[in-house]
Image (cartoon, rainbow, N blue to C red; front, side, top):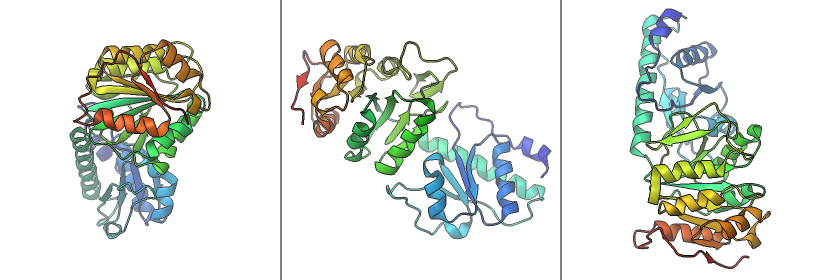
Length: 329
């Protein structure tokens, strides 16, 4: 490969938005390797590169890839995975020799166009309302159950803060992608919070939000909890005000109490899983006793309340004098 040519193809990401994660499925090893080299020279992350059958490739890396690069002949295949998410595909030019400067430049131009289209799509799908899924011990299964029964609600994105070890965080992404209708990804620097998405907050890195865009830092979360539910709630409340919300699930401790108050002060809504419905009730009990909330109930009741709050006909002002506690089981 001509590396001087590859350097000249470097993508100039002037808008600060995250770049799509790439998957490559090509039969010919030399061409597959060449496309990967060109993509990485542009600053793109290649999370999969193989000649696997589509079903295997999607199973291995489906939730870690935003755009799959493949041969023209593969585009007509049914490439929906088990959750019926539409797989985003792009054909790669397989004509010409991989050593050819003109072929390398052509592939580089194709990749630049794909990145621009991807970022324009993200901008068009920018969420108008963002809700925080807050959970700790026992919360993972509750969040999954909540999302399983909820369609990708128009105009809404979720940010998911779960007290979990860093090495386990990526498993949350795969769990959501495989078992719910929602798209999931780890919080990446520059990502927009888009409709129908769940952004998983990393335990090791503090994030901030500005203009609906995720920014990751290098400093750890303050306090004893990682990620900090209160910290994420503060970011959402300041960024989205009355069009944000928070759903508190099973967990230990009291992280989320201050955040629930701030979201309510800004006009947002807070729902709490009933302590009787939680595997570990301490977090829900703390928010109900010391925080601020609109309604508490079991998972189905929370889902119904969430849909009602977002209904244009609900007339909900975002401010209630006292939270309503519904039945547990």
